[in-house]
Image (cartoon, rainbow, N blue to C red):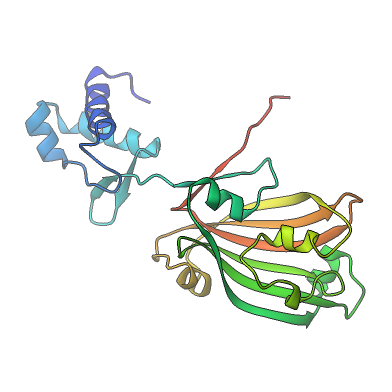
Length: 237
């Protein structure tokens, strides 16, 4: 980052406009010509200041050389806690909802058998749904669980699937192994989430376990990156 006084002056000028709400999330900042005219600073320093604010994720550059104040994501999802999507949405003061796409009982694939430690030809419940906040899509969810633990008919509400499962079984889901992957535009899922072609998603692939270490639930959750920010506390070893 720059130690140049002129570059920092431009950065602070833009930051002050954001902090005072003169520039709001999604607003385009003045172009380089306008900034030069207002501040009497050369183009190189202005360009460098904007570049640094983009790198710091305060500004975002759109197609057509337009730079805007980056919109803030309204939801925080902790990665070091097993928190339901319902709680994530409700913590933001909004109503969590569920739109069911499909609820089917299928024969487990080789992948399902491996992940959930099932017998060959075991039956699984496959639940496809969208989690919404005040009716707006936030997360696409695909969940798989052995039918003898949880049938599709057992889940017909807006409640957390973890809570729904625990209401039907005699164990608790205590932890999950999670992998995180950035996903670009996927026509089927992106359209369900009302995403633009340049909107990325974060895929959390999770295997949930009970207190005995037995795999119970296999989940793939696609979060809209424009709406959800992830948080984790990392300890130095």
